Image (cartoon, rainbow over all chains, first blue to last red; front, top):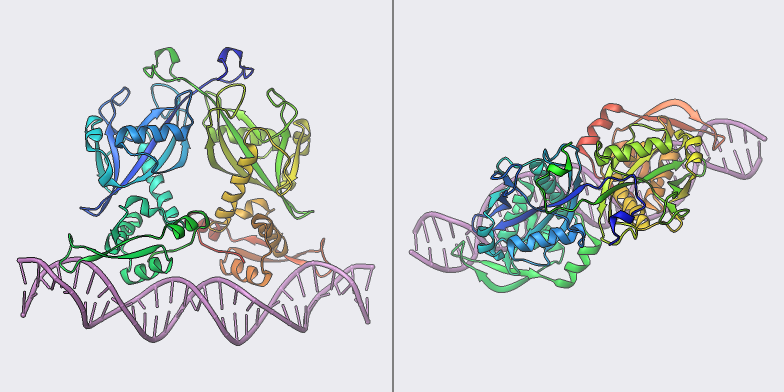
Length: 236
Length: 236
DNA sequence: GCAAAAGTGTTAGATATACACCCATGT
DNA sequence: ACATGGGTGTATATCTAACACTTTTGC
């Protein structure tokens, strides 16, 4: 990187740039959509709940920074990660001028490494029961959920929240959590099966019922096709 | 703002933050969707075509900066302006580390103040005939068009590109330009009239035909309703 | 045998698509 | 009277929404 003293951008004042990451996970046990939050360690607002974040370092882009903190806090790599919005209000942070580029990621909650979460004093909160958060982080969570809803309708991103083998009741409950509303289960099955995304396996998950629910996995070809092409499904 | 020397964010390195604005206008005469570009004045890349941009000042948020440059270049205020994406690649700018928060705006091309555009050596380019641009600005234009397409389908934003009184053939051609494809005109009229957004006036525009096309204006109540609620129309 | 969750189809209404001709006017 | 762009309607196919009972199995 160029030495700043040689920059010809003489009129520009540099600003602190942070990333914050809205990390979503689907808790298969409680069947709730959750967000990973942690207790902020530095002033201002030390001790309050906050999104997982960091300043952007000189040698990394924002997406790399967001990915770095995701790994630091969960141990996971190469998961779904997408830019949400850049928040740049002048008085966001009382300490200094800081803009924040918010990201959101979708992870398999059962795969995060618990010791990392403990080490960082982090915790999972239900999406509709998020505590007061630092600065504008609550806005970020709510914007992220809207974006997730919008996206889940057009692309097969919801699957990033599930393990490779999952059941239709699980998938159904996940979508109900994402949209925060009741969905007709028969129509849901029809629509989701009509995409051709799902492959039925002949094993069953019997942890939630005596009858057991069949396992499914994606058809990877269809999955990639829809990742680029998209579809459009409204669930009611 | 806090004096930087007192900041407790001791590990953070500030970064230059710019905004760039993809300014769309619909040229009623040629019936083409256009983008406002200008000849960059500062190094690096002085003399090359570029989006309209500026560094974010200490006392302004990104959206205020984007709005400021929009007014500087066109004389227009309070037009449609929305954040697109934040571009933060480490080597975007060879001179220094600069991240850019891109915005896009929709203006009535016939209302911009020509002397301002001339003063800044700016020019309107057809959307499918954009020259080579500085850094990643071409990517920004192409991302902005995709976002515009996505948005125009869900909210009545296309109207920001038209004067208060317009004709259905004009609106139709605008949507064809936005989607860069032929649309069935009978179905288009049906769908757009079915929204209840349009009020037919009893005057006609005769500049493009002998028969003349009726003027329309929005129903403001419906307009505001849809601004928040949205709809969903695919034009084919 | 019963409780608890999994799984399954149909119908009516709404929406989307495809498509071709007449109208009004200025010259 | 004719050339030019403006304006209109219908039939078919597809998709969506609403809705309730049977199946399986562990206890």
